[in-house]
Amino acid sequence: MAQVKRGQQMLRRLGDLLVVEGLITDGQLRQALTEQKGKTDKLGTILVSLGFITEELGDVLFSLVNVARLSSLDAEDVLQRAIEKFRRRFTTMEADLNARGTSVGSVSPEELERSREAVKAQERTR
Image 1 (cartoon, helix red, strand yellow):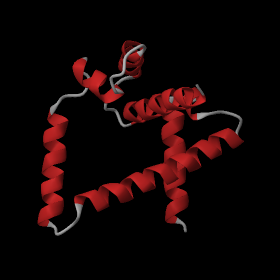
Image 2: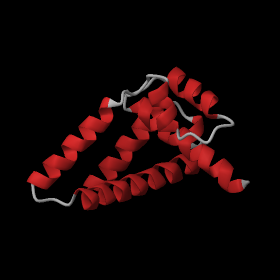
Image 3: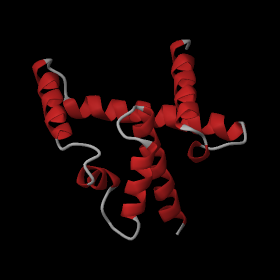
Image 4: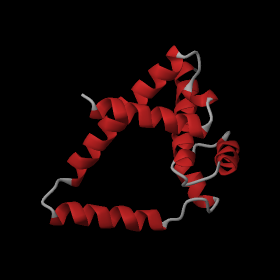
């Protein structure tokens, strides 16, 4: 049961990042999460089915894989490094917010963005 709750929290956090990046609105995220309850569909699938994120995103991803190939880069390796960077930054954001007595799920998208920018700035000074 704890894993299910953790998974739901992670989905909410990832959804919040979509909001911060301006890809969806907070209302759209809430609607998608409500739609997801009791289903096995992934959040991304629901966001597409509701029309909040278009399927053209797949075309963009395919184009990026081609750019990597033409640049003699391994797209999977590049993606893996990006995922690792995301995890590192997100873990730091989460720890910083927890140290301030709050959490990723309880702050506004704007505060989440400020936290993300602070983590990026910390990385640049290292």
